[in-house]
Every structure is written in structure tokens, then in C-alpha cells.
Figure (cartoon, helix red, strand yellow):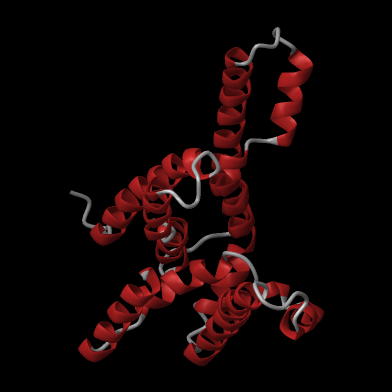
Length: 229
């Protein structure tokens, strides 16, 4: 056994991999079934319970790449991490482009295959997104490894409010009010630096480094249970 490995990160990646497969299995039937049927409700439940998978993958990446002892240079970002992601994208885009062509009723058309390669396949979006995360990693490391926990918490607080809380409120309000005040005003702030998935990346590092009391852990577990509901 490699003593440098973090076992619980390996376990999380295994569970998240299973959850991603379940999400994709559910998505096959998402639009095919009647939303009033029991089958659709079962799919909806499984899909909802597995939505933590992608955030957890990013949080594990944050744990492994943002830790202070992990020195990552800008050159390494491109030569090691981004290069690996590009190789994976190139290989799987080709595989899926030809697989779709073979399974279609159309004759082999290189132009169509090339178009599919250029447009990409929706389920490979994670690989493109992770390249963006890698690009900002040297900058993010300066924030999280600066030994200023207040700045780190401030970053996470902004992300939680503007990327999680407000969008959730907007989604609820959209049912009753189109173009509500929050939906109109918030985009004008242009706080793009804390948008997207980068917050999960930083949150993974923070939760791994932070020492929580038993009371705090119980509160977090309860919040996780409520979030699932």
C-alpha cells in the first residue's frame, strides 16, 4: 500500500463513479417516461440522490492538488495535467464519433464524423471543464495556501451565496415570477471569479484541512441529509 494515498478519497471516487453511471442510466428514460408515472418518480429519486457525484470529484481534486505540500508549477499544469485531459478528450471523441456513425443508418461520411468531433459529445463535458480548473489552479493555490483562513472563508461564502443560494432561490421564484429582481440585478455584479465549479474545488481542500468538532460534524451530516431530501 502507498502510504501517501488518502484512502477516503479513493472510496469517494469509487462511489462517485457509480453515482455518475446511475445518473446516465436515469437520463436515458428521463424524457421517455410519463412524469406522472411511478417509474419516472423512481428515476427522479435515484437521479436526485446521485447529483453529489460531480461536486465530490471536484472536491477530491481540490484535496489532492491544492494541499500546500503539492507544488504545481504553471509548466506542470500544461505539460502534465492539461495534456492528459486533452489526450483523453481526443481518444474518446474519436471513439464516440465513429460509434455513433456505425450505429446510424447513414453511410460512412467523414465530414459528418469530423463535425461530431468538432462539436464534441455532451457527456464528455467534465473533461473540458476540468481543463478550466487546471488553468486557474496556480492562482487558486495562492489563495488557499496563503495561510489566511478568513480570505479563504470569504471566497467560499461568496461562492455559496452567489453560485448556490441565489440561483436556487431564482429557480423557485421562476415558477411564480419571471424576471424577478434577483435574476435581473445579480448578473450585473459580474462576479465571475467565484462562478462555476471552482467553489467545489476549493471547498474540498477547506473541508479536508479544517478540523471540525463532533458537534460541527453532526450538524454537517444533518445538513447533508436535509439536502438529499
